[in-house]
Amino acid sequence: MFPSRFRYEAPQSLDEAISLLRDGGDYVKVLAGGQSLVPMMKLRFASPEMLVDINNVPGLDYHRTDADGSLHVGALCRHADLEHSDLLKGTQPTMAAAAPLVADPLVRNRGTLVGSVCHADPQGDWASVMLALGGSVVAQGTRGKRVIPLAEFVTGPFQNVLEPDEIVIEAVVPPAKGTRAGGYLKLERRVGDFATVGVAVAIETSADTVVRAGIALTGVGGSTIGATEAAAALTGKPLTAESIAEAAELAAAAAQPKTDHRGTAEYKRHMVSVFVKRILVAENGTAAGTSTERAA
Image (cartoon, rainbow, N blue to C red):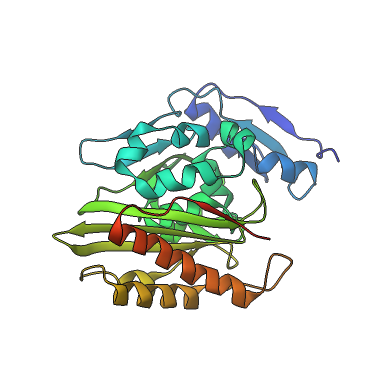
């Protein structure tokens, strides 16, 4: 199927892109990687009046660590850039675990972390990873810049809080309060399929005590789920078999899965518990989990 007619613009600067969003009409979409937007347009699930392609805007294809330890990922940084990043492997274990599991190599070569977060697909990997890490996005529009925590950014399936004239220019992970650890595990029927269940875990420890924890869930609700009670069960104490079991149970309780062709709600909730335990037990012993499970 072909998309509906639309106006195409390829601005050369961020200011030009923002002006196009401001003046472009009632329904304008920003194109970065297009790996989610273009298929939706072809199926006519999305029919924007204008497409603003930001790939010619300079200076947005970075990922870097600032002096304070915060990680910044620009709007045009591709999944593949993060997948092969030595920086992430050394400093961001949850992100390093997730990057190779995003879709398939073709999608990873064009898609972007920022685009995935803005798309707000309940089965998107990066939103749960960024939520577990306590991340935020920086939006820029005609009224300037604003920082939006991920916990406040996604409001529902395929919905976020951006104003019509705003573009997210980067995603930010705050500095660690201790030694950062964690992982991302994902259940999918085949490579590139949507997640049946995904779990992101990020912890920070100091003197054997967990000083910060984040757990977020992919594909088991109407939007990305932050398992805050599960994370709280880990915080302020050493990582033990008892705290791991409690966190896994609370994470499963936070899930809101539905029975469908990928499995029963009970099965999906069970896999949330299994993945939380697997990541944390691995971390408690050697290294965090970084694998993908295949469903039968």
